[in-house]
Image (tube, rainbow, N blue to C red):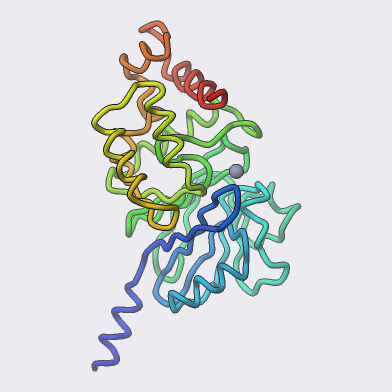
Length: 261
Ligand SMILES: [Zn+2]
């Protein structure tokens, strides 16, 4: 009986474990844990992924890729005995067993996973939404106080993808691919000046490092992230845009400012 209870508890464990990859690109990698199994997301360094899994007492049984940029697929081992999921365009660079094209769903050790097609940063980008937590593994689509660059994608396409993510529950925890929060909060202040909201996150950045950085929710991002506020009259004024500018135009102008900042 005791055994059954203990086993039941561990089977119910479902969370996202974030860890920092010590490199100049400031990558975050993640393990999506479901019971004793883990999915490694965008492994940059396979040895580090295995070490993190060991420290969490789980075994990596799947690999999920958000997109095909080198710093997101570099650690995918040549031989892996389990599903490797990603957009078909990544297939030329590493072996996929499950192609993710468009929106889809699958189960990971009994827990639902929703694949959301989010082109824009790249055309092969997907996000993983875990409704039972709820959490969003967003890769390089949505960052803290920012969005991905569109150097190998398209800004209007990214706008449409971000609008879709806004429909997810406000309590959704946001896990993204890089530690960009401190710079993005500074960028935000460069546009709208310090506000109560930016000050709060500025302080949160100052009292943490890349390992302990806070995890925001989509609700937090709605208040902080200017890219989620393209209808804001105040933002249009700050960007010197006419009051009747379309949200796409505001988003484009903001992305351009961030590229030049
Ligand atoms: Zn990328």
